[in-house]
Length: 140
Length: 95
Image 1 (tube, each protein chain N blue to C red):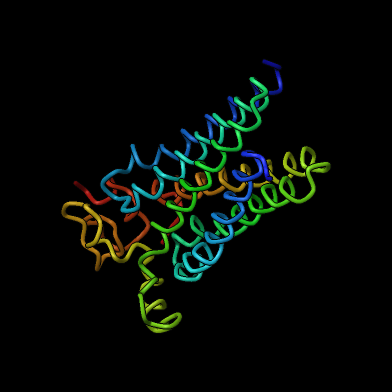
Image 2: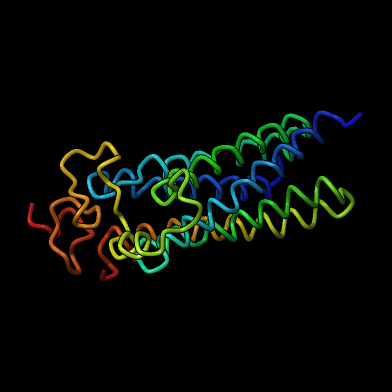
């Protein structure tokens, strides 16, 4: 395995872990844990494909792994976007998206997030303000 | 008769092409929200990966260089997404 491939792999794994960090550190305040985890999974699978392609020289297997990575990425994107997709609506509902966008974490009730209140923008029991993004900032 | 690798590449193009409008919907849905900074890069990331898969499928001769450039762009954008998520959720950016 070349040094370039090792460096590339280390960077990819590090970025994957960086994406997973919010899921671990802010599990109570982050509602899209599934989506973020799926995004990190996509990158880890991509890393595996890169190792198989450049390290082992198995082109066909690597393309299959890249396809799996693309499917994981598609799933992550869908998990982010599903709040805004309504079957049969025929397009964007401008008023609805504007109100949702004002919070950014709306639709939390659909996610298994315990006591998280969707009306507060998806942040658990947090007052609106600078510290509302952190669990520790809400005085709990 | 296309090879299995070509079929896998075709599958990547189909999946990523289907992902692109979904990424646009997510980015548009969160366009005015703080979380929009996390979701917005999904569109260029999808485009970059779609470019990589498309070039490898249609122009394999320029696939190595193009996939390295576009792949690096996509990975940089994914890293940016992770940073934005950490900054937002850690409270370093005011809502």
